[in-house]
Amino acid sequence: MLAGVHPQDLAIVKGLVSVAWADGRVVAEESQIIDSLLDAYAASPTERREIQLYCRQPRTLADVPVHDLSYDDRRVLLQHAVLISFVDGAQDEKEKQLIDELCEVLRIPSVEARGIVRAAEERAKSSLHVLSATD
View 1 (cartoon, rainbow, N blue to C red):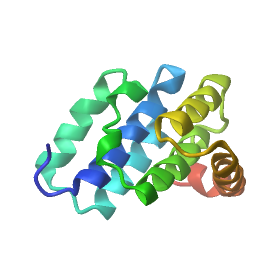
View 2: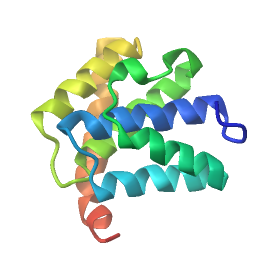
View 3: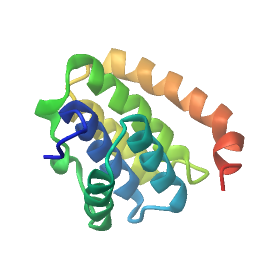
View 4: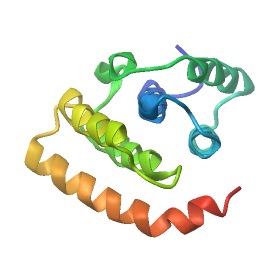
């Protein structure tokens, strides 16, 4: 485990790596979001390097340390996951399926999950122009 980053924050980042890999690749924009979260969490250079190495291998939801996530953190992860699924310009079918699976893994009731996903999709779609301008 990384020393300076809170375990729940690290679990969110690792969960996002799994979502980024859903379409079989991690694009630069997805890496930028992960880097921005590491900035927000004040990750050390060593922690950043460990996450970079973690990102190099394909990841699945089985790699998400769900037990490190609180009730609220699970919802934050879901919201961030929806955002990262749109950052390369579109949410593909594999990413949609992964978001559905993530809801199950995170044990978020389906009615609540649909509302979270819908709101996050609307935010992501309205932010696409901002996200693509960060290149």
